[in-house]
Length: 215
Length: 269
Figure 1 (cartoon, rainbow over the protein chains, first blue to last red):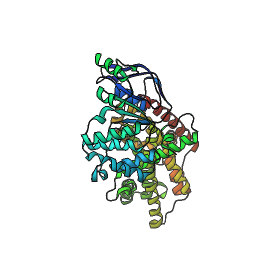
Figure 2 (figure 1 turned 90 degrees about the horizontal axis):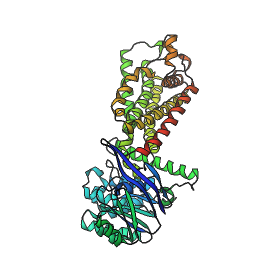
Figure 3 (figure 1 turned 135 degrees about the vertical axis):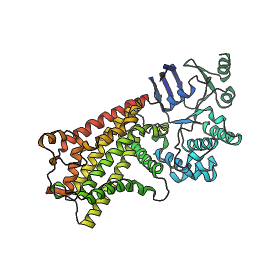
Figure 4 (figure 1 turned 90 degrees about the vertical axis):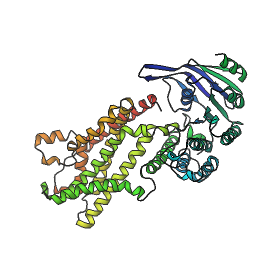
């Protein structure tokens, strides 16, 4: 279970305080697959980062009663000056996974060829995405936080990523943020709409999509 | 330990489990830092020790060659090298502090990596470099000039105190850098300007009594004097107060850790 207690988040900018989230209360239970729909700039990514613990709320609290992944789909979780294989080693070390096995697993999923042993900064953006996704699959989490970025990238990899995620979500929990209703319909069993810094949950995906498109 | 335990050291977990996670994270960070800084090319990790050693060696050699007499009849090469190495440690820890957070922000995607882990990993490496370089020099002086340290433990202690002082100060600078760019701009200038004050290249007993008292307010002065006591023993008078340095270490480290905790909440990753 993940419970969000009155989450507020604002950022200081040159133009003053920008409020992104204005009091979010929500509970995600184990096994749920929830799509979070929101327009660009609605704060989807911010919300995901708070749930992941990458950033902290201005006020309020995130209660995690299961293991939660870092936000997948971002390039953020890796280091650019070391090789893909070293990134895999690093991830294996901090999460206490067998190193050689993890390195192998990431290699076979990311399909980077010899680039796997070269610094990540030499990669194309598609390769970075593949590595990032492969890294996140190497660790078992109860709950996966997924940004819509998995929808991009080349079609073949996109399909494999979706397949891998589908395998995981069988018994796992999934929170997917997106501005694409189709993606939410494909992956999720319920949905929520993020608008004006507030989150409204719907039991049925179609209800959420209707509300999202009406907004 | 499973990934489940690792990624969520919640309140139900014991302090020992949390400590184990932290040690593992710091170990991973240190290895990664080694990889990013030195890579696997040519001399690779050896640069860790060679960098301070070359600088220290150059300074020592210059003073040896200019050959001015030292008070107390000390060897100028030795004197400047054992002063330079701890200073190098202080300077590199503090100078890197403004960028330590921004350079490693991507690591914070992994929730159980804390800012403290990142700073500790980096400073452990700096400490390792300084200890390695110092060991190399002491062996060199011993084997070549027959000048072995009087009490090696005091040298180790002095260097360790310097590391802890620098670590505390570095944490505070790192916290400052989260809130203001200013720190990035002025840190190098200040470490440069502070060089003559730190006590790296003078001894307290050279100074008139009034100045001695002032010099001993500066915590780093005690570290250098401790190192010199370890190297030269009773050949020269040294002045230091271990309790005084420990007080500074405790204060800087507690403030630094509290600051990092606070900064983490405001950090935009």
